[in-house]
Image (cartoon, rainbow, N blue to C red):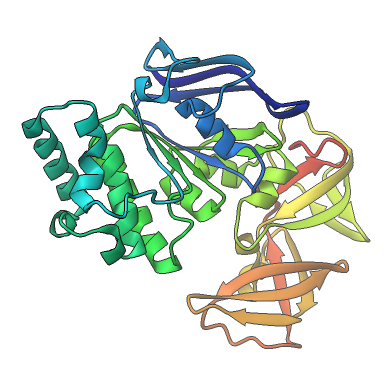
Length: 357
């Protein structure tokens, strides 16, 4: 059953088209992440669903009801913004209950909802504090709690962790995941952070220029990106690209032939100019590379120790590439080592359309 259904949604600001004939079907209880770079339209789409922006064309349905022109308060949603937007003169409890009190809800029901949200978010001891006495992470929990007490069917998150430091972001990311597991509500989450997207989502919608480039599970987007943009956006560090051509059973680039045995093409095998992408974590070194379908000896140009693993830089066919090694690998600048990979883990894209081959 669909929880949120967006049909042919178009949004224009003057002559500028921000969203273009966009379609989206989100299942009940699904955690969907809208992922993309700044300006791609992800927050704009969320604001359209929330009713904060009037769309130009199309329809928006929430829980089977057409809410295209409904007020935000009538859409059955709870929203958490990037800014905490808390009332500084009110206590945590006051911030969480303000909307319910304005709506005329009975005091006993308000207290019940606040107690439940405080337990879920572990903010019970903070209820009588004011926002000025809270850390950034605590303020964001309160902002989430304010949405929770509405007991909405759909929760919308607009980059809620982007103002926090790295450790707090990691901690709250886990809390939001636990919240979804516990509540099983539909959640739509906007972020530019691919780690947040990969760890939180049931499905990810990768956006660019107001269009959804790919909508699929994190695993499918990572393993089988449908175009070069998605392949380059997902993954840290970024995927390595070689420019060349598919020629029969090989990919040829600057005098190097990479066998394509076992590569799963989208449809019939094609030939012609193409991009070949291989992720740093799919490149092996030393003995592990010796028996792979493709291997080559290279010179290590740069080493970045990262604790659990080491990122090494080199060049293949005059193309700079990165590859991962064990964190304890004894490698240094100038070393000659063997690297290799299995082309079945690679991605091929047409040179002109940049779509997956």
